[in-house]
Image 1 (tube, rainbow, N blue to C red):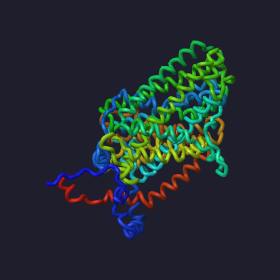
Image 2: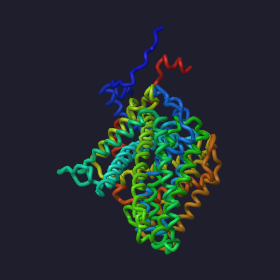
Image 3: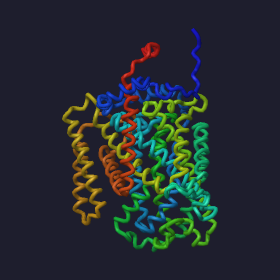
Image 4: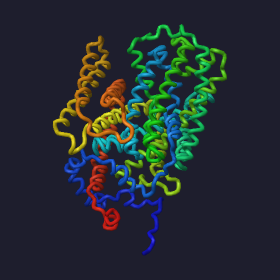
Length: 574
């Protein structure tokens, strides 16, 4: 018998991109389109399984990713992904404009919301340690269509998030040189406002970060660890100096704008916590997922929340909130106590944070794309893992090239509103998916219990949306909020009284269904705090995603779900 030669990693045939039967020829594609409704009916609520995501889909990559990460690596990957420039940029702005000294409570509220989402990610990642993160988890519990909408938002989040970080890095670096964030950009006449400042430096930064991610997970983790330890040292320095020059009288009044100011600020500073979901995508490369992921993910997010609260408290005790500089709060605060040189330390720390976020983002985003490609929702060519590096080079290049193109043209304000909605939307879906996982098992959960569960979920959503709408409309008094909270409690109680049909294998979210239900409420509240522009951009992007799904993704996944194994493969399986 002749030895079968391994196929080249760098191959570009039509069947590498569209191997499914529906795309064999134009006539087969026309036939597939004519059956779109029937196929949509088949795939709409079709759910994947743990085994399919863990075992079967991995074969699409041809080579395995290398298990090389410990809990120590995950802690610093989470730190590198989350602790960026947000804490330095947003704290002064929101303390000055909205929360005052109560900004510490804003960070605590946002931290709680982020931690609840991290709990949901942790339970899933421990039970199902695959590269797909939330995409795989949602596909298993909420079905193919919801998972595709999530996949589209994950892809949007990956491209826009990386592009936004690249532009932020460029702005911060330019400001250090010339106090002008556009100093290194090229203005082009004829292009619309918001798209007319070309940013070549953002491209360079993105290509460097993604090149490191391609070289190997272990290399990228080591570099992130070194950089993150240095930033942690700088943050400790900021806390020590800040509290040594603290004046408790600066905390009065503590609530200058009431609770409204606290919650408004909480919705803004929440973005200082985003990025932890990237660590969940590294589960496939974790040595001992059941031990390492809970420590690395929930442990690091707890520490980060405490540090953010302490940094906010130190700033508002150093200066009266009315005197805090909105744009460079920590640098100006240090300058006022005679430490002008400290502004460079703060700037370098913020720049380092963005660099680490880019690096960890490059790792996590590529792994999302790998699992999405394994499911054939995008061409399976992007699922291939390189045999030497053990990394998904094709998927990384997809993110690199698309985010670089967006970063070259798009301004930060255009990017941020798109990113915000997608992130919160996926976090909310993850909380719903965890409740479904615990309370609904096909052919096990009685129909009557399923009906009660759906009623409970409906009441939870209705109460949260109602409370958010009351807040957004500027409703006064506590009647509206009281009704919303009571209904939320009743809806959650309905679910709580049902028997759980599945227990977590190793690590589980505590106080289910209360904590996931609270996560749903907090994410919906934060979504409601976004402007109408973010809603319209989300709707437009979702319509485009559905159009792609009906024309391509639906038919590819239908073919994969109903395909027959070749004879040789059937023999191996048997």
